[in-house]
Amino acid sequence: MNRLGVLISGRGSNLQALIDAIRNAELNAEIAVVISNEPEASGLTRGQSAGIETLCINHRDYSPRERHDQAVVRALQERRVGLVCLAGYMRLVGKPLLDAFPNAILNIHPSLLPSFPGTDAQRQALDHGVKVSGVTVHIVTGELDGGPIVLQRTVPVMPGDSPDSLAARILIEEHQAYPAAVRIMLAGRWKIEGRRFVNA
Ligand code: GAR
Image 1 (cartoon, helix red, strand yellow):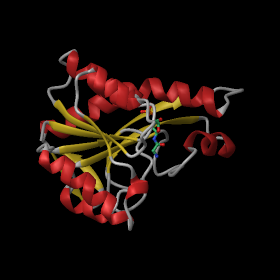
Image 2: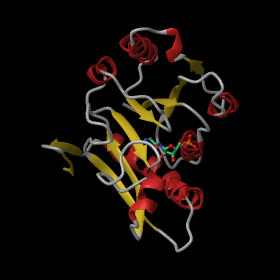
Image 3: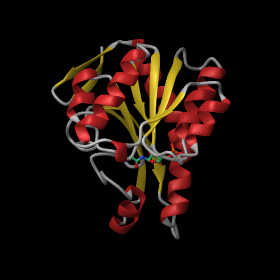
């Protein structure tokens, strides 16, 4: 399982956190491939700079959308990826990918799920007036941002926060949380009970 495939759509700072954790021997894994659905994603450069194979599989080139998922699955399987890490991957994960990697796709989300799923989680949190937000790493299922929760960390909301300032504070926590969650997954001492991720 410790061959990772990282899927991105943009900046890739969580990808960078995984690269750094592996480099610092905090995470015993190898990133086999970085795949972006966006050709302009700056995260692709982070992968290349780290000497990792990077691919762009542009969703606009595939129709219907399952075809895109199938192309991603092929690329991951060809590289014997065991765990898929979504890192700012702004696409719904379709059935072909879910079926090919059961309980083996992680996502990182900038809120304490089940609060504020979907896009603009930090703005949703501010609009709601919560005093604490945070980060969630969860297993990806067919339910949007709804799979079993592997790890959560809290982040305080400060008076005067903007979506950007809250996002920046959450991001610092994300960069710790994602390698930690991958470590938990790779250690393998866990099971899924109902919708709960349980340390065995
Ligand atoms: C991160 O904040 C991540 O939690 C969020 O996108 C950002 C990606 O940043 N993901 C989602 O909102 C998923 N619903 P990055 O490209 O620098 O890792």
